[in-house]
Amino acid sequence: MWNAASAHQVRKFEDLMWEIREENEEAYEYLMQFPLDKWTISHDDGKRWGVLTTNLSESFNDLLKKDRGLPVTAMVRLLLDQTVERIYEVRSIQVDGTGGNPHCVSLNDKKCDCGKWANLHFPCSYVMKVTERMGGLDRNFVSEHFTTENYVATYSGSFSPVGHEAY
Image (cartoon, rainbow, N blue to C red):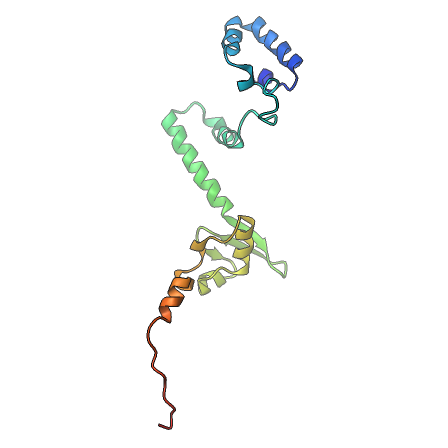
């Protein structure tokens, strides 16, 4: 069925459907009850750009490939665990410094091998490099002490001038 659905030419689709019909008439009748433009590439007038599935569904299929025999609840739990693990892996990235020295950045732990992020509570250049690749710096990576709101609050009180030491 997949070969028929993913065939790009109507002639190839028809040949493959003939093979399905020869093998199992009931399967053929079942497939033919659905509009062809809804499930085949050869009849969709290019609406799918030659793609039958989304990358996301393929990613989930890849994760579950070896565990298909498990109960649904176990598969969902496994999928969640594997997804969290992959997100964590992606968020721990190694970048090269200017001297060619590699630095491991862990966005989850807010740590970088250079130590500046932990010490200064402000992302170092390596963190900036990683977050730039990921679409920009997340506000959560900067300590709340560096926010505009805290800056304004720091200087919002009244200050009395300090007199000259001679007086």
